Length: 122
Image (cartoon, rainbow, N blue to C red; front, side):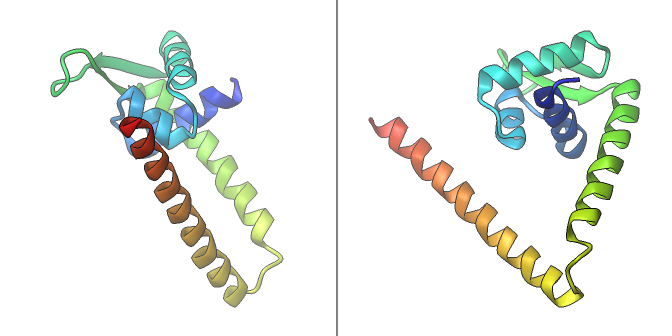
């Protein structure tokens, strides 16, 4: 499984159902990368692609039973790796790190939104 596929599988499992646009945002990929990764996951039998009820041209992505099993294994590895990375921090340091990380993520979201708005206005 490629890194893009793994990111997409993790995003679909965590935030299902997702459109391809939402998948791109959630997996930090561009729309083309997300679309190709999603199609590969569909071909591997890990993701189900169905027509969107709200968007006649769009699709909705969800995990199959096989995809659910893969997602759980991936998330177990991610959780374990994250715990190993922060294991050197005290509880107070970990709380501070979480707060700072949340702040950085929110800042990044606002920056992406501002850039998207600027692109629309151009």
